[in-house]
Length: 386
Ligand SMILES: Nc1ncnc2c1ncn2[C@@H]1O[C@H](COP(=O)(O)OP(=O)(O)OP(=O)(O)O)[C@@H](O)[C@H]1O
Image (cartoon, rainbow, N blue to C red; front, side, top):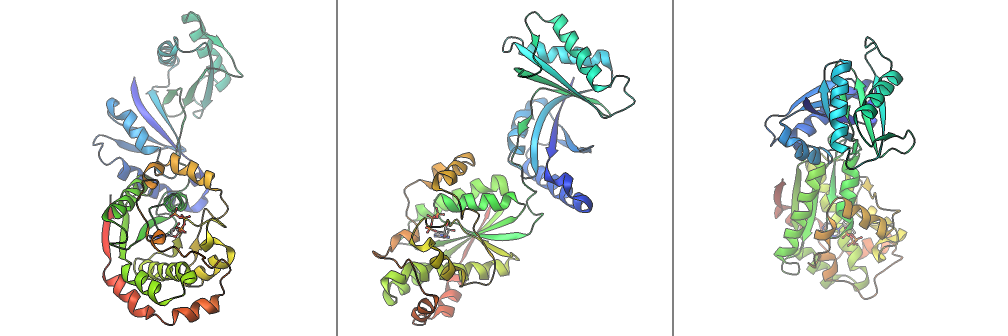
């Protein structure tokens, strides 16, 4: 019996004329995520990809493929010739392996190859009967079986009993590129994950205020970006020195406006980096009302600093919902490590919650914004992940 892996894609199949563009991206991303497995071979079959590989690699390959955006589900399967006797043998072998753990089963068949002599319901009845006859304690339950045995008759026959859900979404790179403003917190990695899930390639920008923020805080952000690459593929991370900008703002601007002015600098620098890198949008982890700088008035003031669209995929989500995703994508435990972020270094006692844009712009006039931005960009450190 030859073991293979069936890989299903979701939305891509609805893409009409552009379908092959999405399929090619998906294939490229799957190959990149499985680069360390030398013996994997990829084949397009009707409506899915078929992978052949060394038997001992199947589990590791599936755990990598589960994170590739564009894949909706995966099944480890046996591939056999279109032959009823062989099918009975394989179906029985699979069910015998499960006999101790289960009481009931159901056979579900699909016949894509119309030259096969039996129709789908007949295949299911036939194989179900054979399994019942050759096992001791198993029963058929068509409503709530402990296990389903799936049979697909195509150019070959595929038999399997697991459909493993995968990441879904669209292949990264199929929908342009955006710059994620990544802090060391819980929210921004989740925001990056959500936009990458829609096929957007990521670059990431982090503001680091050494010595107010430590080397360890920077390492934490690098770790978070590295975790994200499991889903998004490679990320070019820009570490921007932010100490001088923060100090100048702290010394020269009204205390209650400092966070907002700092945010506007972050947006402007990220926009400049995004432009140079061919990215078309910015991404932040903001959500309405979470902190003073995330009221609608504050978000408007921050937004006005740039002309590029700003994606805020968490905008309507509760903290618990965001944390649930952070757990799912494995960033949570790194995000909660107790290292400081530049935003938490200077926190005004009474931050502006209903800022007026004209007043903020007026306050900024005291700063040499262009020179500060130019200097920060000149000092950028670039880290290519993974
Ligand atoms: N040091 C930083 N470098 C890059 N971006 C940052 C930094 N600090 C904050 N941001 C961006 O600004 C957003 C809002 O930051 P803030 O600290 O107010 O909120 P948050 O909801 O706690 O976000 P997070 O959990 O991502 O830190 C972040 O989600 C992130 O996109």
